[in-house]
Amino acid sequence: MILFMKYRIITFGCQTNQSDSERIAAILNKIGFEPALSQDDADFIIANACSVRQSAIDRIHGIAHKIQKKKKRGEKTPIAVLTGCVLEQDRKKLAGKFDIILDIRDIKNLPYILKTIRGTSNVLRKIQGRATMNNINRWKTAEKSTEYFKITPSYKSPFSAFVPIMTGCNNFCTYCAVPYTRGKEISRPVKDVINEIKNLIKKGYKEITLLGQNVNSYKYKIPKSKILISKQIQKYKFKIPKNDYIDFATLLFLINAIPGDFWIRFHSSHPKDFTDELIDAITSCEKVTKYISLPVQAGNDKVLKRMNRPYTISQYKKLVNKIRKKIPDASISTDFIVGFPGETKKQFQDSIKLFKNLKFDMAYIAQYSPRPGTAAERIFKDSVPIKEKKRRDRELTTVLKKTSLNINKKLVRTTQQVLIEKEIKRQNEHWLIGKTRGFKTVKIPITPDSSEKLIGNFADVKITKALDLGLIGQTPLK
Ligand code: SF4
Image: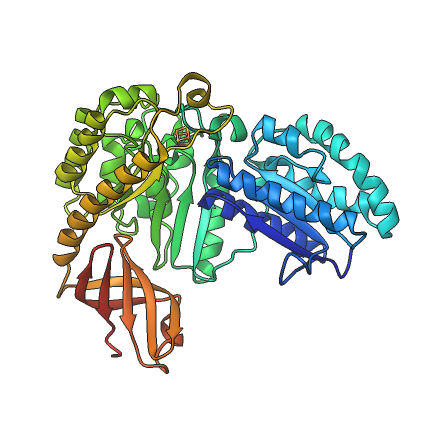
């Protein structure tokens, strides 16, 4: 056992990486490491990388640079580990700068590697030199699977947990690095997912977010007979799947049947896999919040084609309208890229039309930046100037804020169930911050002594004011 070593995990990117970092922390805690308060205080730094944006990779180079500088000055330096989503070319560039480069799916081997390098700092340094290349070769050939999900995470929050149900992606959107860094889609065994959630609910968790790059293509082979396990499921007019696999709709029914007072969320969905069965499952399962994140990415068919998104705007609109018809209280958000290579001003105006037409509750808008190694970077010229990308972002955000404000106004004077997440104290201001079932952020002004009991719990909140991207509310305690 290695004692008195402190670690610092630096997480970049999405919720999947955040969840992976909780598993890394669990491994390190188990072998006696403690979290460090800062990077300077750490004996051991793990950068959990994201390759979706160049800025994250630049920051990882920055971490490596800082360590190298310390080394040159003869100061004590931490052991540096790189994991997460790293493209092959970045991996090669960073190989000499990190002591260990490890595939996230091999993270369970970390105690073994650390056992190898424990000892005096001199020994450590010597082995570290070898560790980089040895580990790249050794761990590259290790079994790639969802095995690492079996590690019980050190969840950051005591009431809200990310639960990965799959990893990888088969879609190869031309702008995206994920299929190259995480490999092909693999679904996690149903039993493991259910057991992790059952344990969380026993501990009193209130919000479970199912994670995957494309959750609605979840597919796990299981004999049909095994599905007939729960009477609770049958009350939902649960249909036995025609095939011998559990799909995402069926998985939602199974999770919904776990007794307890909790919400089920999921992230992220691909429009091409949003089936009628899934819409029925969301409608039937009372624990599934009606918040649907449905990335459209562009507002024009030609741009979608260049992105390798296999649907048209007309199909996407039909899908959103079908969801709204079957789930009238659905809160729909989207992800969007402005300034994709070749996107003309006219094509961008189609995006404006789409936003005006579909009136999203929320949108996460990104300005396109090429990622080395992706198809878009190889094939297309980054033709839209940064200034124009910024302008398009502002124009689309203005439309979003208007539509979102109008939707939010309809919630004023209603009472919403809110999961209270945190409190904010600023000079004379004291707020609770929470989220509605529809994933809208609510700010609740309170008196200084009334907060603690509510954090991590559901509260009925009366909405008093609509903001363009959020709400103001009042708890019954006020
Ligand atoms: S669906 Fe597309 S954007 Fe999402 S992870 Fe897969 S390739 Fe990337």
